[in-house]
Length: 244
Ligand SMILES: C[S@@+](CC[C@H](N)C(=O)[O-])C[C@H]1O[C@@H](n2cnc3c(N)ncnc32)[C@H](O)[C@@H]1O
Image (cartoon, rainbow, N blue to C red):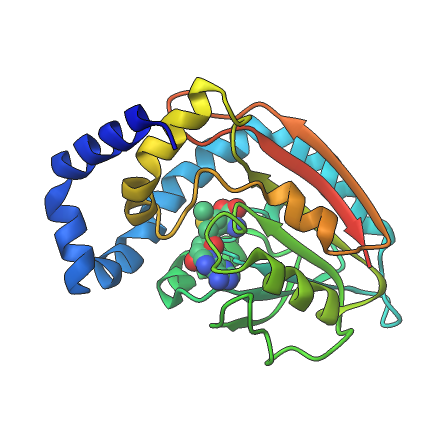
């Protein structure tokens, strides 16, 4: 890593020292878990407005993915506030999963506003360990802005493949690292140690497309998008689908 990047990292660290000390003492994480859903509720509304057409295009494909029951068993992985519910077609039976139980009241609001869907349950668990969900039990898994925050994208994708039925579809939309060697990438490196605390574990420099390519789905379609917010250090987005 460049000397300059290290120096700037140190400067940002010093400027945000109380935050890092709280994290070190273990008192930041519980605080962050409780306020993060409020932040997401605000950001989600704004990003949904910007991404409306793209999300409509992506999730319109869910219509044709009904399982044997005549419904679409859909897992919203890292569901947050339920940002995507409004884009799902009627006939979806949604299971929500998130390790942060503080999202529940925001989820309840989104459910009340989207009565065209059926809701199964809210599972409090991480994507790396979805043992509460049976093998091949889902027609569709959706994951938006989550793989940046998980401990292990590889393990999450293994779990996604386990819970999907054969030919089930994984839809994703994730922010990823800027191109290496660019100034934008160095800036992400500078901010990352602090951003991770503010963004509840969010990494700015993840090259998530690599994990998707290594996950050995039978089919993978992915397109790159510019970031919806220029004022945030999050980089370009990748959006697409992978078939089991
Ligand atoms: C930036 S929010 C995105 C929420 C929502 N998917 C959206 O598009 O608005 C990241 C979400 O990932 C969840 N998350 C963090 N670590 C996770 C993990 N290991 N497994 C599953 N979800 C996780 C967070 O609790 C949070 O709800």
